[in-house]
Length: 332
Ligand code: PBG
Image (tube, rainbow, N blue to C red; front, side):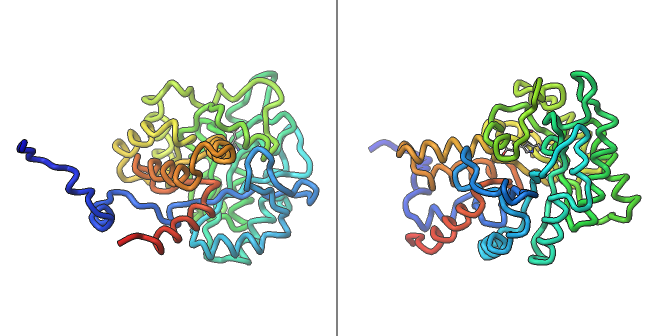
């Protein structure tokens, strides 16, 4: 008989011991559910590149809200599909714009649900870029004005948190100042601090109809090759007053999440499991190649284990259901 001093398998012997020693646990309170709201009823309906994801008619959110609340999901993040677009993206801050209408509706339906509004221009501009365009260039500073206006409008309509996703320099400071000047001191900022120029956003651009009409987003979103630069982005946003920061996408950037976790221990970190990550699991599962539930939950668990405090995921509703069933069926 060999003498093996450390038998690590002892810790895995029974379901009860495994449950007792588990380091990371998912709960529905880990999730933020993204919602697409359409201004024109004709734009509502299923998103073909994202099975299970629907663009909601802004006047028909009751059923969805009930499902979110009974799943115990604490927050939603809103994306708008406006009926009309223009070069400036004016519908992003119009008072009767689609996101503002949705915010007012959701606030009255579910006063305790946390409402997060994505703040970016790409869904609202005719050219599909995240900022004002001059020639081929995405302008930084004139875009900040637009982001300020949109943030104030969303805060007034009921957003608890605004989430600027355009990767413009100075966006957090500009938005914080504008919110404070307008007495929205309690409206938080969740900044998409570390957003990569990723090909995993493909299905979202179908869902939100926001693919750039020319060029790409590499002059403002980060190069997937860079991780140290992520520290600079996070530090900038924290210094400018971000209440929480985000890494996006999630699964291919777990190293970045872990690194931010170590470097910024006191700032909450969100991670966005993006459309491509979701649709890949859906597609492989539909082909019978993987077990959807187990792969989706493993993927979400790994994002939390890497250090995310909250996960924006299209799987939120399904995952909450699976987790509840799992608890009920635990074998010990
Ligand atoms: C920009 C925005 C995008 C996503 C969230 N906010 C698209 C982009 O940067 O091109 C992508 C989310 C996803 O892929 O699920 N408003």
